[in-house]
Amino acid sequence: MFDNLTDRLSTTLKKLKGQGRLTEENIKDTLREVRMALLEADVALPVVTEFIDNIKTKALGQEVQKSLTPGQVMVKLVQAELIRVMGEANEKINLKAVPPAIILMAGLQGAGKTTTVAKLGKWLKENQKKKVGVVSVDVYRPAAIKQLETLADNLKLEFFDSDPNQKPVDLALQAIDAGRRKFLDVIIVDTAGRLHVDEEMMAEIKDLHAAIKPVETLFVVDSMTGQDAANTAKAFNDALPLTGVVLTKADGDARGGAALSIRQITGKPIKFIGVGEKADALEPFHPDRLASRILGMGDVLTLIEEMEQKVDKDKAEKFAKKVIKGKGFDFNDFLEQLQQMQSMGGVASMLDKLPGINSVPKEMRNQVNDKMLARQMAIIQSMTKQERRFPELIKGSRKERIANGCGQKTEDVNRMLKQFQMMQKMMKKMKTGNLANMVRGFKNNIGGLRR
Image 1 (tube, helix red, strand yellow):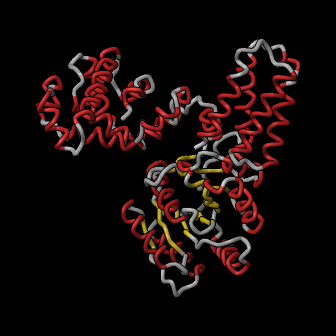
Image 2 (cartoon, helix red, strand yellow):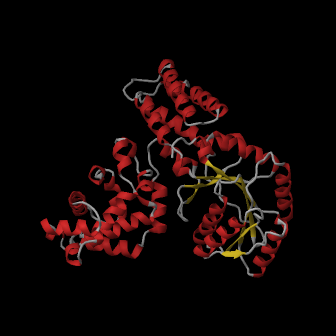
Image 3 (cartoon, rainbow, N blue to C red):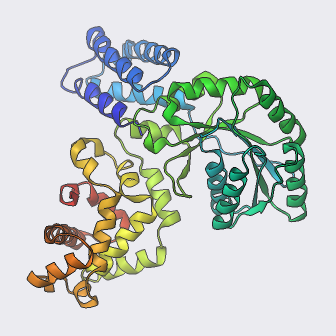
């Protein structure tokens, strides 16, 4: 997400670094570039106009003009304005209600509501330790009910069956009553996709809202629709008392206009952001962290949180002790680290959060992906136990056998061995050989990861 905006802003702000101080002229030139970058990112025009006006006012201030580091000053101003536009801080989901707390999900068809219901249920279960139930009142699409049932079964969420012949209000009330008897903490209600101009469908969801009195009414919107996402959210908010927004498919949106427009246009916070198809690819929305990512500063806090949640601590500690004692780093260790990286969302997700990653050429970044991760794991799994423990054995005919065993070429095995040797050297220099240190060295060794 934000790839294009990050590249444009980084290039624009970098031009200021060589200049002695901020002047009206270089401020004007820089803001013209920033304005174009935001418009190309499909940020709504009123948001862009206010954004530029606010930075201009602050940049022309007396104290700022005296600064001898114009590049740093402008980066701070742009970062602060990005945070302000997106909402200052993360707004947590509200569950303050007599159990079960009801969450109503609304949105257009195809925005990803049903998968988001399941992801949110999983997130509440794992991060808030809540007992969660889900119900679909989409009586117009029986397939949507079946889809939610399948997702709920996979994620061990309580699923309440729905009869398409009943009214949505009745289905929701039955599920809430059943959830109360089962002592559930939260019930998430999945609704049918609807257009805000469809009066009959909007009347239906208004009746549903009045009947179940949800503590949260979240609007699920596809970030790929850009500033239209903000306009649609506003139209829904005019008809329904929304409490927040969930932005989906952010991993496929290189522009980011929706994230930068929604708060300003609707007045409603983005509470969660969907960053992939996997069940755990839902993150709380942190404006300050996202602002840092947009400016190429990475998002170390989220990376650390993901490590704490998803990395096997016992394995990581065992691995750290092994490296500290100088027992070496073999392919078993390397495979374990790759698997942990995969559990954290894969290479692309991690790269996006590394500070300064935009300084690595884009062509090189694009070649480092999850397919590469899968190929590397396949190569290691094609080795014998002895070869994994003693990598120096892998020569000549062994390379050919390994390549044939995983359907790859000998040069792929050679490339993998070269990367492994780099990782070995890196581990020898580390006091602790855990995944956190592996991530720190990841950016420096990215050239060796290319296919």
